[in-house]
Amino acid sequence: MDETADKKPSVNFIEEIINNDRAAGKNDGRVHTRFPPEPNGYLHIGHAKSICLNFGLAEQYGGKCNLRFDDTNPTKEETEYVESIMEDVRWLGFDWEDRLFYTSVYFGQLYDWAVQLIGQGDAYVDSCTLEEIRQLRGTVTKPGTPSPHRDRPVEENLDLFERMKNGEFKDGEHVLRAKIDLASANMNLRDPVMYRILNATHHRTGNEWSIYPMYDFAHGQSDSLEEITHSICTLEFENHRPLYDWYIEKLALFAPQQIEFARLNLTYTVTSKRKLLELVQEGHVHGWDDPRMPTISGYRRRGFTPSSIRRFCNETGVTKFNGVTDLARLENSLRDELNKTAERRMGVLNPLKVVITNYPDDAPEDLLEAVNNPENPEDGVRQVPFAKELYIERDDFMEDPPKKFFRLGPGREVRLRYAYFITCNDFVKDDAGNVTELHCTYDPATRGGNAPDGRKVKGTLHWVSATHALEAEVRVYDHLFSEEDPTDVPEGGDWKDNLNPESLTVITNAKLEPSLAEAKAGDNYQFERLGYFCVDPKDSTSETPVFNRTVSLRDSWARKQKQQNKKG
Ligand code: ATP
Ligand code: MG
Image (cartoon, rainbow, N blue to C red; front, side, top):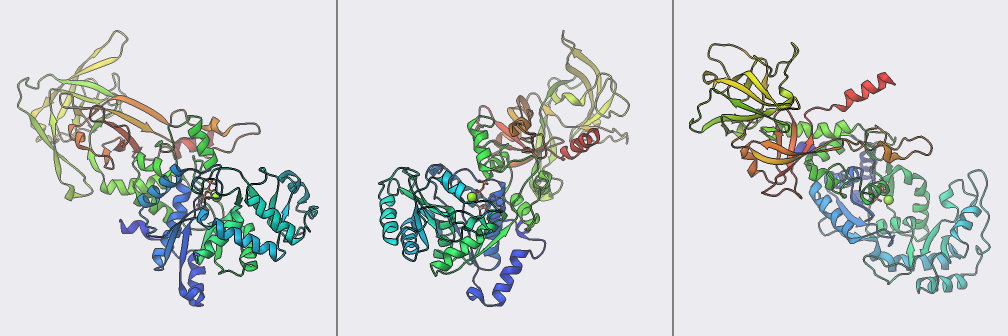
């Protein structure tokens, strides 16, 4: 593991709470956290933040962190999600050891606790519909009205609740509610629903249960059962904390402390699982692991490294205020890392043929030495074959170049990286007027890229030998959305209108340096002048290698945004 990815800038407010708790001897100084995903989708970058925080704190304080599937909603949850979540947490570099839990394992215990609350007069069966309950709940300024069933005798409540469990009723016929305070300023305390009837098959418990606990009734008690000391969640649960504490107190259980922090939001990104599911189901992307998705599996396939994501999560800090983080920070975290670690290669994405007219037809193989990584001499060098026919990038030639264009044009001389100086003498066009071939001469004395007579050229181009090129498909990915805040749409608008139509460009005839035939899934490369690339782990084959562009060399969106702001 890259150590520097796991350093935090300073003490955050959660560390402060933990430090104080430890100083006061609370829980004998123990720190035990958990990461509690609901298996109703793949993990996204926001979850990575929560994972780094929870597992990170446990590591930092010599404590433990559990992985717990919060699987209380049978209608939306699936085993596929459970498996992907485990894979993603491991890939990020964290280990729950033997502490894998499921809220569904606690269903029996939670049921018994509900029965206990009924017995204590702290819960009742309500036979109103959810709509009626909502109407009777009142508003912030108006207290709620008691349901006609609020004062049902305990015996009747116990009987009804048992029959709810036994599957004697249809969905929605009854609910179990906590009896708290219909006038509370906190709406969550106005007799919240604890259990609802759902005659549905659960991905783990099958048809064993006809009733399922609500998140609020399940979460705190699950934390308590696992003796979690610090139950960290996002800010929207702040108003639920009194309820969390109420259940724990009424049941006289071990009391974990709920702590809320601001969720991570990223520009040009949506992180609601519901929205991500919509993108998948409607085919706007090719699955949850599409490299444009902000999911962990999408980033993995795109070529992000776990350490760059951890570094980003740690460096963006932990606060109490909702804000939006620039996507460029995530990308820069990766660029900083790959600049140091990724080997350089040459690849041509939009090829233009170059014929070296004075290069002997019968020349022996000409292997040139190329540095693998100028940032890391230990990576050594490799041999790149030169030949009479080459490819360069179409953009690197102009028929009638302006003065400031330092690349190739008629009569101009440039350096081919690690190879020779070449001069363009002529070009060929097809009937449509497109340049199809350049005719150049090379200077054999400049082998390696320097002229013995000291003459200078301003441009250095990447190139690939046409004879030796590895033919590949290259997928150039860009931001999935073209707006900074994709969900900021006018009344009646659709956030999906903000999808970037250019988020994926497929290049089927890229020409790559032959050594890239050995590239394996998980290897990152910098294609000189173009960006960082990796082998697509899913679609790449030896016949048709597929490379994904992970990220460009520089962020071009900040500039675009500035231009837009000026216009607007
Ligand atoms: P979504 O809104 O995408 O459906 P969720 O909060 O419902 O997310 P869960 O599976 O319940 O998804 O989340 C598991 C944990 O991850 C929770 O503790 C939650 O607070 C945390 N989490 C989810 N999204 C973010 C985020 N954007 N930033 C930080 N933590 C997050
Ligand atoms: Mg949730």
